[in-house]
Length: 265
Image 1 (cartoon, rainbow, N blue to C red):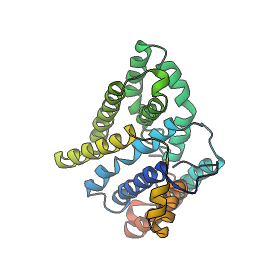
Image 2 (spheres, rainbow, N blue to C red):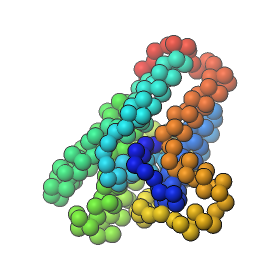
Image 3 (cartoon, rainbow, N blue to C red):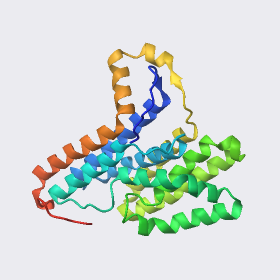
């Protein structure tokens, strides 16, 4: 859910494809959350989305936080208040703001030496539980942002592909364990989640910022425009689809809500 201030290329980009994939899995996740909470497969598939968003936070060359991200987060918080939805943990837009603000500091400390790197991972692992009540996913988001930072700066920090793969495996394991604890997935849904997270990790490890003129020329214009929309208007899509799904859920399950009822958790 990143907002891009720079001029974007006319061709389709790797960002367009990756973010579209994240948008689709995010919507599947939220359909499950708002409309089909008893169908855990939706939530298991939805575990694919967070790694992508946070990877891109760490991979990005800028740490700018556009006003629209603050506005989107506050609009969602206001919407939650209006229907009596829990305000905490803070929604994912605030989580992205927090992770963007700290990731460079975290990486400077972590990359000081091997001991500091291990201490950073251990600290982030144990901080998941307290921080997850403050902003969505807590320090799990920081761990995934670290993967993006490492992939972008792999040559500078001198990591081999084997080390990168090992770090992805470690972060993926931590993520899967915590998500399984929170959701209490049955074994079948746990396997779906593992497969989905591994798929996301595979795409992320091989991600490179590039344009695709051949796909821009070959795909129908409507498809190209749709991919650009879903890849470049992710913040707008996020806010809009949450409001739509929340409105439908409010109508279908009014007992779960309460107008103008402040609910922290």
